[in-house]
Image (cartoon, rainbow, N blue to C red; front, top):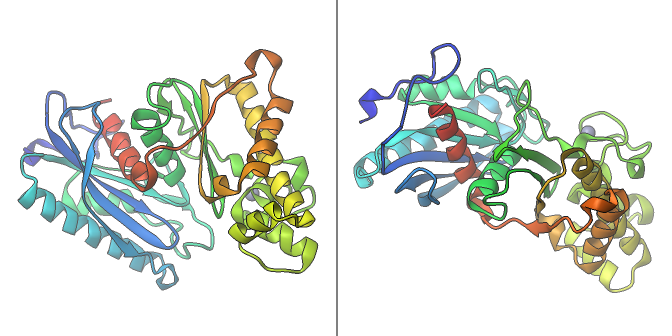
Length: 336
Ligand SMILES: [Zn+2]
């Protein structure tokens, strides 16, 4: 079957079609700052929820640099291809979907920008390298976009046409869903909620180098930095959340500010998009009732009255969401 499948080298996209090919499988990869996950998403039917098999994880070892990381990713893909072809041959392999931290160029699937979490990752030709090595079509997208794609197709937002998706972990990622698909934008960079203006971050230099971005107050690293600034104490986000519940006034202020600022920004985006729901995920969602209450108050404060009651739900797919989402992105490209 794979013999019929050609990498996407033709102008305008992929030459392949998978119409009528059931069952089938896609290799899904999720590249983060500390670990790289991979699995084989096996589909009985296009549109059905895929079962992820053969899941494995390797350390990112980011300090070894971008070239080494790409080698390791290519090696992991090779192992999964081998497993798919020997143990899961009833699911013909149609390609590879890769979710990665950083901004991905929609034009060629290379890394347009990655911050210091992945040194040397900027500029890596991920898609071209994988396609040339394995002669399989490959799709590459940002990890939060991929996670949103998973949730919109098979998770907490399944069936929704319009949604805002937020990942509040160490950093603050976002994605926008319109017409049941993640909006990539002109270059592939759409949805960076964390790097939009927030009045709560006035005067604070962001991880991206700009000033007054939401990530500096609403992300896990932002919560830690704001608490350190206020008290001189370096605590983890989880510890600060606990302190907030135990009556530490500065901890409570920082946690409530994180919720309120994120809520107001979500409300602003919702005002633009009029979404059916908002999906939230990440470690910051575990910050407890003060955070959640502040989030909801922030959303309400910014939403037009006619949109009140906008559902804010937690993500449903867990660790597999980016793998499933990257697979879905590849399938979208193959069936264009
Ligand atoms: Zn920023």
